[in-house]
Image 1 (cartoon, one colour):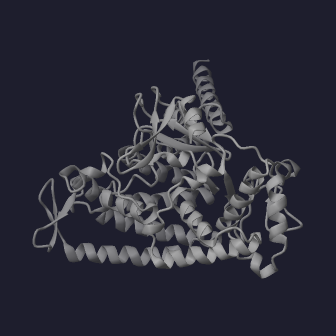
Image 2 (image 1 turned 180 degrees about the horizontal axis):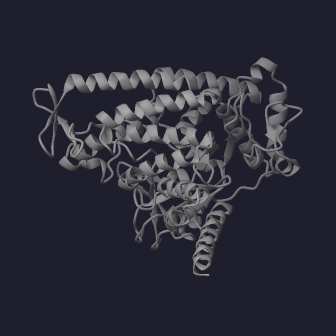
Image 3 (image 1 turned 60 degrees about the vertical axis):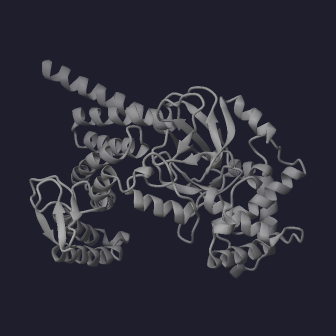
Length: 481
């Protein structure tokens, strides 16, 4: 790990071991908002291909795809991506081509990633693929697997998957137990590769980025530029500070975040936000995020259970909501939600929208205005309205989500910036140029920090802002003439 330490030091970083956290990434200089802390190409990665959706193995594009004629598993958009991947895919292709048609259907993206992991190690050992301080199998070996914390059912599943990998590789010296342990490492350390608008494209293993620990109040953000993982500071990070990113959705109560982290990553978070659990501020936040509203529509108070558990009392005005009333509303919402889940196919969007509007109406009556459940319903509505090109209604829904995003996401959070961007595009489309400029400006202020300014995505956003400003100036000058 000396080579890694030397490489990190050249980037103003150092590797350290912290109590109760293990390996951690520490700053050796000050980092400022928007500054790249570290970037890394994946050791291995795969697109999230399925029976209904395929992507290029090289660039994750969905355009002009052709299936590899030999293995019939991997897709490419053209010769350049195929050549880029050929050293590794040549071996993978030979291995997959030997499987019968039915067995190939069992080769999920996760299985493929493990096969590629061992083939890449082989090629690096043979000096076919170069080894660097940030790109070598030793970094994978150093990752935490949490094998001792995994239940028996999951261990059996990993063993079954490991047997399939061994069958594909036909390599007797690879240990089943080691493969199973690497599957556990994938579960704890692999990252979902997303596009600039945070839509998932694939999965990758970034061993150095995986050193960065979680915080529910992170000082950095991870985004992707193609397959490149880029970690940027979202606030001033002084020298000798730990770099942190968030592994999970932070717009959730402490109990929900802790549960997700424990189930998926097998640790208990002790960040500044989590140590406030059961304190008044945390109880209030949880009640707003996941609780109910006061029955007085003019009151913005949050509700807590009465001591006799017969109802919920507003902490602002003292009004009580009956427990049975809440229970009935929750049951009605669940029944509609179950029905809506079955109606979201492209041919049923109109019906699904009606159902989600009814869910929203019921949720508005029972949930706090800043409820996460209400926000998620509106996000779903927004998505479907966009698909149907109902621009005006989509904009109205998008605007309703903004105050919730502003309240529960830190100032420089990519989701907040992207929501402003969505608002701006719709406002501009509908001729509301002045509002579009405001939304685009807010989007730029956030996304230039999280995404940088040199990606095609950001250049397009900056161009839209300039065009909207030019249009507004033209309108003003036309009125003056």
